[in-house]
Length: 257
DNA sequence: GGTCGCCTGGTA
DNA sequence: TACCAGGCGACC
Image 1 (cartoon, rainbow, N blue to C red):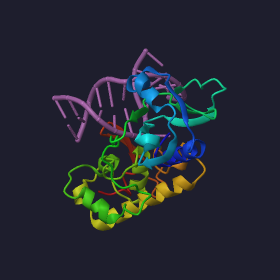
Image 2: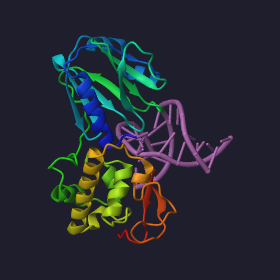
Image 3: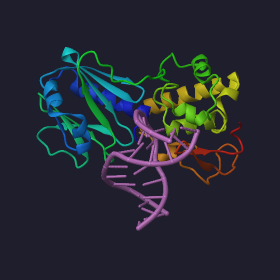
């Protein structure tokens, strides 16, 4: 269930297990991953040291010696599992990165929608991303500027990674509930005071989720996944609608346009 | 703007 | 058996 807090947790895990270590071998176990990782690409990573593990929104960048980079995205169901080359890979392991010291990083992903790509020096594999909501760059000014003049519903805009890198479907719904904003509200029409509340809600939710040891079970969410249940603020029934093909949960009474 | 495809698994 | 899933890029 990787939203930004889970990706950050995974990043730390890999950082601890892998930084300073040499890659012995990278192997794709699933054809979707094999398609993106040619044999020669995989070979070119052999012997390289993992120097840094960075996160940009939900993207992970492993900086390797010689200027190479591995770009990882968990999509819907990916995660890192740290184990040993001596044991059999888990059933849902899609890609294995074996280190020289016998540590094995497994990209486990039941749905196999995650991506792992290797890039030679000089290539920037990241798409254009807005500021990380956990960083100081993300504030009301930024949000107001990023949304100015746009005619999209606020929920859809929040999922645009150029607006805020790392906000996913769950936290978009949660933040809009906290800020009492109807997810169907048109971005350009929202007043600055409401955007300030929204920016603060996003920051606070992601910060809290990142420091919590839990990893986001359903009942930690106030609106997400609660169709038909009473709103925790006003007791009206939570509604589920579809926006841009994704579920949106909100309270039709206390979240206003 | 919306819809589809990528993939598999869990649940009604 | 059908529908649903937290992402995202390609397409109309």
